[in-house]
Image 1 (cartoon, helix red, strand yellow):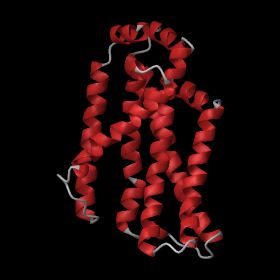
Image 2 (cartoon, helix red, strand yellow):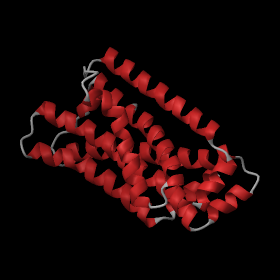
Image 3 (tube, one colour):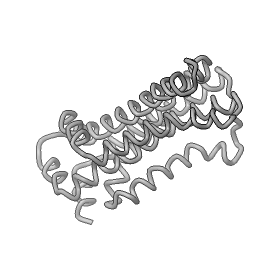
Image 4 (cartoon, one colour):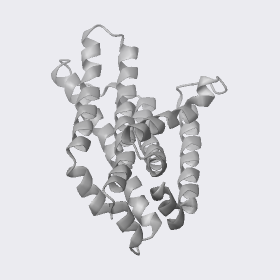
Amino acid sequence: MLWKEAAEFVGNRRFLRVFAIAVLLLGLLPTLEAHKGAATGAALLLDVIYVVLSGVIVVAQTAPDLVVRERSGRTLEYLLATRLPEAAIFGGKILIAATVGYLSAMLTVAVQLLSHGLLGGAWTWSFLALPQGRLIALVLPLVLAVYLSTVGTFVALRVGDQRSAYMVTMLSLVVLALPFLLRLVTIHVTMPWLWEALGVLAAVVAVLVVVGFRLLRREMLVLYLQE
């Protein structure tokens, strides 16, 4: 199942185009901003934001599309007719989408480092020199990738249009940001606060994955496909 999903990603030009654009664009933008005279603190913040955004964009595009393509090609119905368990079918899609999204974020880090060195004139670890930067850039994209891949996969079961599924998946981030938007929680970029916040987020994502797969039933999926 994993091999099938990976082959579909590699063989899809649209997937590869979104992946390449996200990595290159969000990898080079921080260096271009730095050339415009951005402050050091602002430049470091942009680096981290672009890394996280790269993974988010790729996962939000890939996860729904893996299901939508199966639905439009009627191959999802074939998979459900086999003896493969539901968890294997959609677990493979979720795992591939999350892996691709995290890989996009890590390649964006590499492109940023290269662009700072080659175009900026000096090699620097930028935000990776800070513990907070390493935590946000290396751990947060992984947690968000699992969250969005799970949400995107299940959204695509009910929303057959790829663009609509993408928008709903991206809007799901608002649920995570709501406590901050309502100022119920304030942001403190310190290591204890970041570890605690990431721990809570990881727990929420774990519960979401477990509940989602427990609710996933073949009969329900067949009904969704008939709607």
